[in-house]
Image: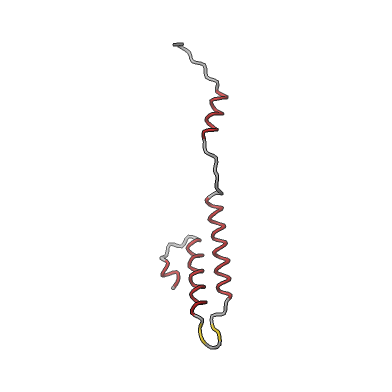
Length: 87
């Protein structure tokens, strides 16, 4: 066995770089921002529906708007429980 070992640093560094896994999905922050924008859009669309029709409240429209708003707030980082956000 030789006392001195020769290492080709160029190929060693290339091998180390190739061993690293390349990211396959978009970044976490980009995904989070896209999801927050989608939920915000859904909340705005749900709030645009009239809550009162023919003199009575449309409970379905009210709940859809509340749930959409709660999801959007949760996506933006709110730490409150879902029941309080809907309420």
